[in-house]
Image (cartoon, rainbow over all chains, first blue to last red; front, side, top):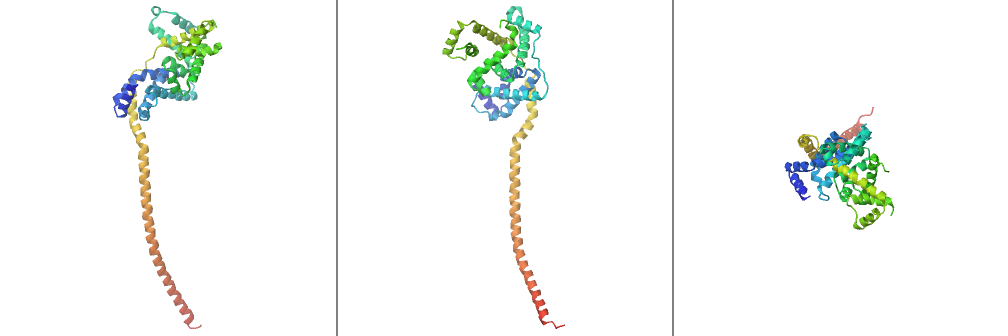
Length: 191
Length: 144
């Protein structure tokens, strides 16, 4: 955290290399958060660029009230919400339904052991399937699941980013997981 | 406590965001409730899916494209940054010139009014003279 503050301070003093270091450090996190929320890799790339452009222009207004990643994630989530709002005007359909073939593949991937399936194939299948399930959820659930499951943030960090109480984080996450479980119900034939 | 409440706790337990007391309470419940044990397994499986899914790389030359974008926007950004200052400075200069112009005009007006008063008096004298001449003519002209 101190390292981020140092880099930011250097950047505020005109050191562009410090900004480059921050971009290198956080580009994966920012891109993956956006991709998981908006569900389109090309658009996620564009939004990620906008996020870093905002960081570049607003670095001067950053106060040490929160950590740099919390501030960055807040900008990222807000940019995603802006993008999703823009989308409401357009008709963009993301794939949200699973066909039988995909259901079987997912079952295989989850049941298989390391040696049965290559890591890359497993990753691609899961990426496709999890993303489809995520796309079908309301935006609030997508955001909270992304911050927890993809980014591994604590409840406290999530509450700061989403500006909600810790109790709400707990309940919203529970509900989001229930909805996601519902979308992947073919994995749970017992119920 | 109902199973529903324990399920909210399950979600927090999975994230290691639960107090020791609640954890103890939950573990006691799990010893007796098969449904909640199964629910915990589902939640673990969902968590595992996200872990196995891994992270995706942004498109190629992300930084290069970003720095190119910043370079292109920099002029615009500098303008955006300095525009309010420039606008304010221009406003101050305009207001300053308006005040100066107003003051100069006021001075001119005062001077003009002063001179006008004198000339007015002169005109009044002329009128007076004319009036007196007319009066003399009226009184002393031969009767028709």
